[in-house]
Image (tube, rainbow, N blue to C red; front, side, top):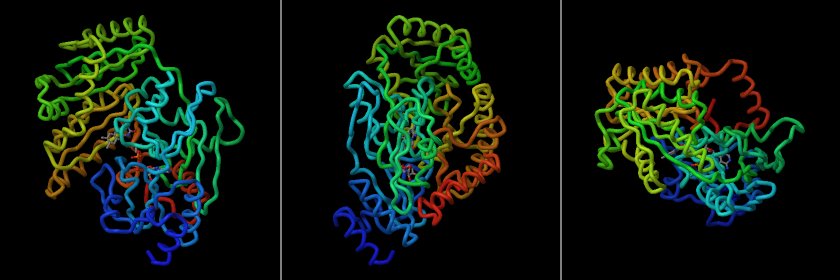
Amino acid sequence: MEARLIDELRRLLARERVLTSPEELAVYSYDGTFLESKPDVVVLPHTTAEVASVLALADRERVPVVPRGAGSGLAGGSVPARGGIVLGTNQMNRILDVDTVDMVAVVEPGVINASLQAAVEAKGFFYPPDPASLKQSTIGGNVATGASGPRCLKYGGTKDYVLALQVVLPGGRVARCGGRMIKNVSGYNLSQLFVGSEGTLGVVTEATLRIIPLPKARGTVLAVFPRLEDAGEAVNAILGAGVVPLALEIMDQTAIYCVEQYLHAGLPLDVEAQLLVDVDGDECSVTQQLQVVSDTCRQRGAREVQVAADKAESDRLWAVRRAISPSLGRLKPNKLGEDISVPRSAIPEMVRRVAAIARQYDLLIPLFGHIGDGNMHPNILCDLRNPAEVERVQAAARAIFDAAIGLGGTLSGEHGIGLLKRDFLPQSLDPNALALMRQLKATIDPNNIMNPGKVY
Ligand SMILES: Cc1cc2nc3c(=O)[nH]c(=O)nc-3n(C[C@H](O)[C@H](O)[C@H](O)COP(=O)(O)OP(=O)(O)OC[C@H]3O[C@@H](n4cnc5c(N)ncnc54)[C@H](O)[C@@H]3O)c2cc1C
């Protein structure tokens, strides 16, 4: 990138918020995947006006801009594959308002999800979207990826909580979309266009999010299944019995094995799956729901069912689930984390097919995730230094996508497409819908400066 443009950026932002040293650029060259590519410069704006000035310069000079929150993404979305400017939002991190009458929180994009949760809960309210990365990931990143988490089974994902967004568009125009009200059908729902747009349309600089009253009680059940298929069937049986759990998470045998190697918690290694089920509501309904979940799991073949006696025990059960991601690195140095999502009716078959694909390609593919809503994370463990294994990984990834799409599902439930799944997108979308997306992108970003090369 030309020195005169760096100088201009330094005039627009304070000098110390324009980073160019090789060490600083390295920090902004990767995300939660194994992809890596350096930007030419990193800018750390403090205000919407500063973001607008950077986007005006970038549009005029046709320089790529890659918005970046915490860089915890799992699709390569914030990796600057074509160099240019990484625009980090981590210094725009103020919670501007938590209003318990309008029931909204207004935040800057760099606010960490867990900080928002804490601020809202301090006032007796609840912001449900809870990606497992909630202690790292930003609300801007959550909005841009359409992030979800275990609690989204009952309460919905980020998209269900976005009421309004302030977005800086290429060229530097600032658009406010939506408002603080629950009902709003004045014109197109533009805020939702930006949810899940992965930084390809503009930079989110403020989000107005719905909050809801905090449920009073919560309980946890752990059910251990000798047969994986029974666990898959139990998921639909629990929902069919009228209980919509707060969270319904699966770990298959390989995932249990990985965590046991990591935590040495005495997990059962001779079973094919375990389900972790959380329910919430008032005390009475929680007791009832725990009973229904326990009975249903037993009827569907669970060998052991444990109801957590208190919050400390529930936390211990959840610590096992949260240890999955860190534990995977113990078995193989790399992983390709998938994020397929299938209709509920197809859950048992998808679970079967992932196990068959692991056998066919002789790979370790632990499967875990938010099985209650059909969103699963088969993680293909591998060593990228082994070319033969990489070929099998690519074939297995394609087979998993094919299976998900064949069962009426999709490539990504919550992580997005980014760079990692870009080449598979046409297979997963209606051609006219894909063409419409491309038209929208060309209209909003005619010079293709916003996160070019991602998604499409
Ligand atoms: C251990 C681990 C667990 C995870 N668990 C989950 C999970 O349970 N559920 C889930 O959904 N995801 C999960 N993720 C993935 C990731 O945390 C989410 O995608 C998260 O929303 C990314 O937020 P971020 O701030 O890190 O964004 P980044 O990774 O920095 O960026 C992600 C994308 O958003 C764009 N972007 C970021 N900020 C803005 C902005 N202000 N305006 C416009 N575009 C922007 C970027 O360009 C990029 O395309 C997990 C990741 C890890 C590492």
